[in-house]
Image 1 (cartoon, protein in one colour):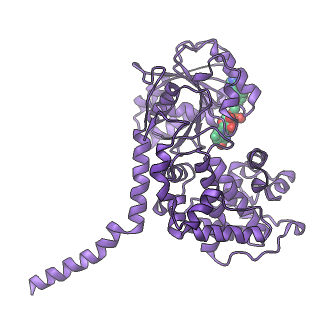
Image 2 (cartoon, helix red, strand yellow):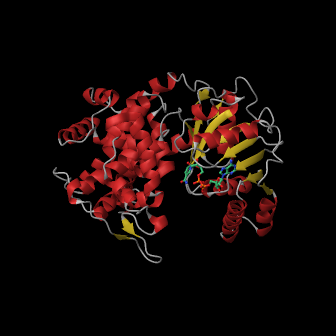
Image 3 (cartoon, protein in one colour):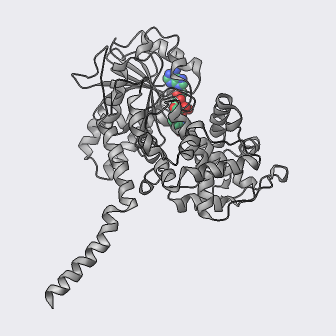
Length: 466
Ligand code: NAI
């Protein structure tokens, strides 16, 4: 009869909905959502200055290259008056045309009307000279990645900008503390690290140098939020957070190649895990030369465990710099999909058994990243595992349904991570578990058990209320 059918129906509904509502994937997605809400609402107490602005901000952007143009377009879309400078007139022209292309694309997607787009573009002025910066509230520096050049640009602007302005550098790996070292007002210098492409990647790393004032941190966080990004405050250290974690992952992919695993198989395993593209494809996108540079910085800072596999240097030496020059690991035809095109020299081969299936390949790629994240927590580069997870979801497209790197590692068991790392060490790789990872594994705990304690002990950025 009807009542029975209803009961059976409800029972079936409960049986099916239960796992959906309370299952792992739901819990993972909720955790990522909560972390992103915290980042969205992150407020920083401004102790010795004004953390807020009473009027519409005025931004200066230095450098009209890949990042400068992306940041410029983002500022304009958020209604911020922007003045852009590049030393080189033709670079400036290219940057302006890139900005107008980005704004037009949004108009075409009907995110803004034509009139709105024109109003945005009308708030942009440009120059190759050092004029018109007296009203700047924030300078976003996106010029070449050279310490001396960045210091010079800072010195030039210091004479021009108002006392309450911040100078935000988009450096990938230079220490903010080094950039601010010779400044007259080091307290207002800060790292604000956007990811490429700027309009697509929601993460911004905010990096106070040793002498940055808390009001400048507050302003940088507020700016990132105003631009619709998710700010994560990280301590000044080699590679900050995301690039530091990315490198061991990319290097692990190179080591799999040397163990005889075909490149496309490695990339497919990462995609099967849920990443937007495989590590070797990503290296081609980033540029092999850039990856070699960042790798060298991290090797110099961390020694043996960050020693790069010889694969990237081999490619760079052969002029195979990735997609920008048509060939890297893959051949990149004008049209159609990239085609795998690399065989590591026989002399580099490593005689160690390769992982057997997609799951083991993914573990191999991610284990060293987990270990490096533990080191970042130990060094207080970042304060909570949830922020690590958020940063990787928002910065490299780590699959949210897995809840982020450390939640996924907790789920699989940290003991297993440690065991796999030590098996690699016996096969001749310079890996070992960090003291924190080893301790958690030995006590059968997860990163999750750390969260409250790490937030309390927050000396470097004590002003931040999460
Ligand atoms: P880019 O080479 O495309 O552009 C740099 C521009 O700065 C050039 O147009 C150059 O003429 C100009 N320039 C040099 N000195 C200047 C000065 N004193 N004043 C004004 N303009 C000057 O470089 P890109 O890729 O945009 O990188 C800029 C910064 O952003 C670098 O520090 C880089 O490490 C960082 N970054 C780059 C990412 C990327 O994927 N390309 C991602 C995140 C950060």
